Image 1 (cartoon, rainbow, N blue to C red):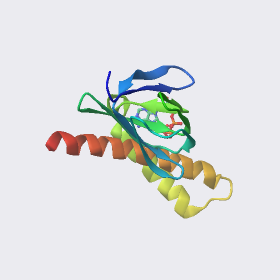
Image 2: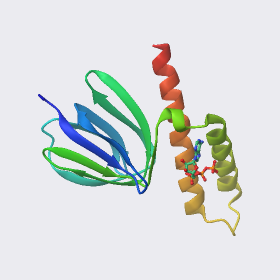
Image 3: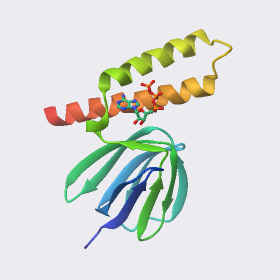
Image 4: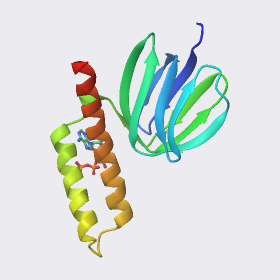
Length: 140
Ligand code: ATP
């Protein structure tokens, strides 16, 4: 197939996505990354954020939580701690988790690890962002 490459997204419990795609965008710890056909090889780590897969002129969206990506000439493999489709996400639960993490972050309670609070906030924000992105797209 012209101008496509293999994308594998794997989590500890499943093969989340496996197909030929035209482009993938995701959030690395260094910033947003877009990988197109004929990309240069690279290895990078992920943070929680939206991933957008482009296949046959269609966008497929998901949220990925951490892990790393191995970008080779013919394929991209993302090993992620967790991955969710929009339909997996309970937005009220994510908003409640976001509020809880924001409160904990403000209050800086000594017995709560701020690194865990930040990670939880990032996960919740990524979930809420994905649902918002999805809603905006369907209003286009
Ligand atoms: P919460 O405080 O709401 O449990 P969390 O950030 O602690 O959020 P995680 O540790 O990221 O939750 O995930 C634990 C499990 O719960 C995973 O299987 C994840 O997919 C699921 N999960 C977490 N938040 C949501 C959500 N908003 N909607 C659907 N599933 C969720």
